Image (tube, rainbow over all chains, first blue to last red; front, side):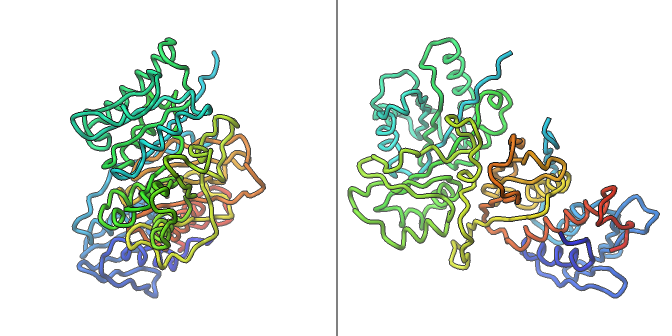
Length: 99
Length: 348
């Protein structure tokens, strides 16, 4: 299994834009951030170590936290894909282990 | 209290005139199908198909209030509940399987949703196999013109080519089209409604004869194909992982698929090596944004411990699915106590 690297997150974002049919460029910066150039400029970076969140996303100058990569994807798509309606569906793998 | 026997419900789908009723009629005359209850859905004011079923049992029911997929899902639930009640009361044959013949215009996905999500039914019924009939004469044109026919084929566990008594052979172009839509579904041939395989509804998650989960048949894994020639919209691929997947990662992965794919995830089925349950694999099953609660096998069906998830999708890129699972698994591993991948937050 691959460890979580900024390269892997960048690949995820690149593939996600393609999957959503959203035009844009993805660039990895020297300070371990990902910058998406599209109709909005988006910067994704690891949250500071003291934060309870894992990621920080800045969209057109406005910064928000994200607790997981799923939350990152939701925010990025919400900013770039006009037809996207965030779905509140939650999948519960019940039971998580066999009872 | 005695454990209740789960009754498999199979779905017979296929476009208008593709031979569903003929095949069903022939099938019901075979001894091994003597304890089969049939629900027939017809799209029209006058029910006719059920009259074509030569069967004296009162376990053949026609639903005529509309197409199952769009208007009468609640009717299907009520019908199945009524069937079970009559079975329990001894008012009809003590059937051991149910077959639903859908309208030729029906999208099978909402029907599968009903079978998977209705809590009242879930304790008694289990989704069996999905069989799609394709007219060997007119099938190619139908597949080209009717999107719903492509979806019917794409979600099937087995495909039956009908009307071979008229055409004799199957055109290569039709065969190639079916393979492109659903490369993993085995294909049977029907001549005058008679099917060469006696195992039509055998490719199922639940095999009532063996009382085991025949996962390999259900997944119908085939060697990887070159997908470049596949249908422009509908594709099928298998995601394989050797290392166990943590339960949380699997949950988040399915959640992401549901959220970002929605109706374009026609079907997902798989066997997963969940890290927290190394001896008992999870069998997962989803249609569009709805996922069935996993079934936990008592043991692995073979020495193969790899996780295998078959996805039948429309306009979903395999590359995205692969990297999505990798990234989610890596993130979950990073925050898991004791993981060798654990790092300080923000260390990426």
